[in-house]
Image (tube, rainbow, N blue to C red; front, side, top):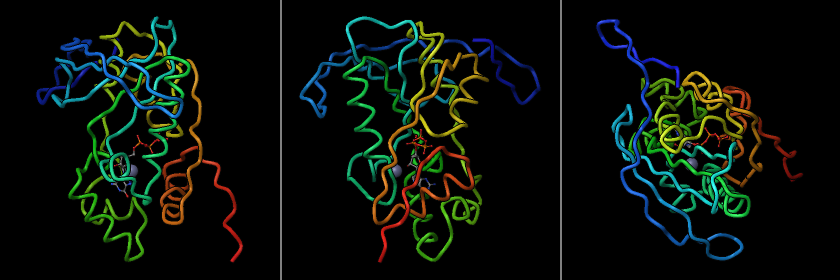
Length: 219
Ligand SMILES: Nc1nc2c(ncn2[C@@H]2O[C@H](COP(=O)(O)OP(=O)(O)OP(=O)(O)O)[C@@H](O)[C@H]2O)c(=O)[nH]1
Ligand SMILES: [Zn+2]
């Protein structure tokens, strides 16, 4: 990893690899049955948060398929249809279980603004703002996420190059800036529900996500 971290004094120090703290086998439900993955915790990550890696497959691939997924309690756990996070997570787990690879589950709820602020943003979206306008109205940037911990976790796993499962160009850009080689990107499915079309449209139009939105159902 060749990236550096600025300090308040302007001094820059190198982004060091994280270190694996625990490596625990866990049975994981997939669409094709239960598989055993390795769940890992880390030390030395730049933001000090409790990010998790799930490693699928017996042998480490030289260029693994990697999903960097940001926490979404509402979608991932409760199946909220306001976003596409839940189905994306399920799709990623099924793919990784079938092909081998790594899921990095980053604790960056609400694109980094946190759960309570995300719920405040939902209220603003219900009054007509899109997902990014709602963030700004709450005095947050569009997206506060920092993917350097993901690069540190991959480095801890001795991964230097990845095939990234994402529609979000910022993930590939930030990982590359952190010294990770993004060999290729693969888009996720487009998971359109009755309530997330506006959210997906804003991600595509404002943040440049590669999402193919099927035409709306005729009334
Ligand atoms: N602030 C805010 N965050 C949201 C909203 N809807 C979903 N999120 C958060 O957005 C993040 C989505 O993360 P990811 O699944 O990694 O996805 P992504 O940036 O859309 O990119 P890819 O799925 O990789 O294409 C999660 O942290 C969600 O909690 C919203 O309306 N406002
Ligand atoms: Zn979500």
